Every structure is written in structure tokens, then in C-alpha cells.
Amino acid sequence: MGEMSDTGCLVLLGAPLGNPADASARFREVLGSADVVAAEDTRRLTRLARDLDVSVPGRIVSYFEGNEERRTPELVDVLAAGYLVALVTDGGMPSVSDPGYRLVRAALDAGVPVTAAPGPSAVTTALALSGLPSDRFCFEGFLPRTPAARRSRLRALAAEPRTLVLFEAPHRIAGALADLAAAFGADRPAALCRELTKTYEEVIRRPLGELARWAAEEEPRGEITLVVGGAPEVAPERPDDDALRAAVAAREAAGLTRRDAITEVAAEFGLRRREVYTVVHA
Image 1 (tube, rainbow, N blue to C red):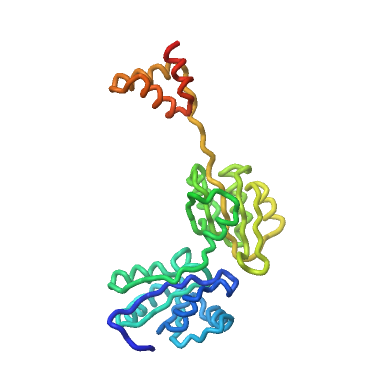
Image 2 (cartoon, helix red, strand yellow):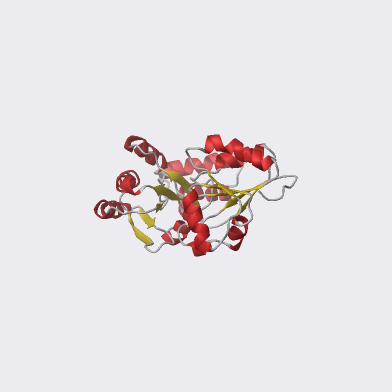
């Protein structure tokens, strides 16, 4: 290990999704200077370091779902002793549907600084490539594995107005898309992004029903990120004229001027102000 400092530091490294050229200069710098590198797949990290022509002088240890609980306190001890620990997953940012959250939380609880050398993210890359609205979105990670639990979760998400980003395994993608089409409607726009940044990168932009049929026939392989358009806004049902007059009268009774009451009622029901004005003064 290198020279100790008063306080160690945990650095989260954003790893390339597939193309080594996407590794940042800071990623290379931290990889080449960390005292310990905790990697989701040590062999994959070794290959990446070789592709980047980076020498890793620190100790490389495995850190994946199966040993997170056991290895976290060991790494916190190293951090507390003043060493620099880098955390890297197979691709993208640690903690985002990948190992990392447990170690970040434990390091913070121990008073150890945590920072990041940010890098590629399958979530934002797929979102940007999807052609779907990206000003507001939500990330759901992996759907439940069993069909019943997956359908229940999708029913709860069907009315979500924001663009939805999901991860899914290749052997479950056809079933997931069929359930999505059933829960969200076959016409809901979507984009299936596979092998992002890799040689066979592919983005299929189709409605959910068509995507489900395509996936059943093609059986896509590789790492898949799915982007689904949000639920369309449903205009509130127009009340009858008597209800409109009553709504305006109620606001006037509460202290609003008639003009402001008409404006407020029109906005509530998605109507033009003149339409409400005409009804009130009929």
C-alpha cells in the first residue's frame, strides 16, 4: 500500500459501459494510484486496465453482491486507517443497480470522505438516445423476476407521467415487454437499447406492442436498458354548465372576484376562460 494519510477516501469510479475509450483521465489516474481497488469482477478490471495501458499498483479485491456484506467492514477498516480505496463495477457508476451503496453508507457512517470520478451511465445514455422526453424521468432498475410480481409492479407504474428507465436481463426481456404492453398499452412509445457503446450497439424505437413481438422473435442478447414514455396526460372531464356555475359561485363566496373565480375554474378543468365566462353569464 501507499503512504497513509490522516483520513482515507473512497472514490467511486464510473467505468466504461463497453468501450474502453470512454474511461476518463481521472478514472485512469485513480486506478493507477489507489491503495486498494474493489472490483465487481477482478478479471474484467484487469482486462480494462490492460486495454487502458494503466498499471494498477494497489491491491485488487473482489466486491460483488455475494460478498458485499462480509467485505464492507474490511474495506471500511482500510479507509479508516487512511488509505485510498477505489470502487469500480463492470460498467457505469457504482451504487446504481450495482454494488456500492452498502460501502458508501458504511464509509459515511465511519466519517470517511466519499467522492467520485464520474463517468458513463447506461441510464442517461439510453435516455438520451431514446428520442423520448428526458426533462423528467424516473429509474426503476430491474423489475421483479417473477411474472406475478412484475405485473403488479407495472400496474403501479402505468400512470407514471415521467419517462421510465429500466434494466432487464435478455432471457426476461420478451416477457417483460409483453407485460409492459398489457399494463401501459401497446401504443406507448419505447426504446430498447442494447450493448451501449459496444460494437453491436442497437437502439430499437417502437411502440411497446411492436417491441414485444420483435423481442419474442429476435431474442435479443447483451446488456439491455429499456426506456418507456410516460403516461399521457388525461384532460379532466368537462363538468356540465350547472357544475361550472356552482364552482365559480363557490369561489366567489370564498372571496375571489368573479374574474379570478372564472380564471381559476377554467384552469382547473382545462377550459378556455371565455367558455366559462359564457356559461356563467348565460
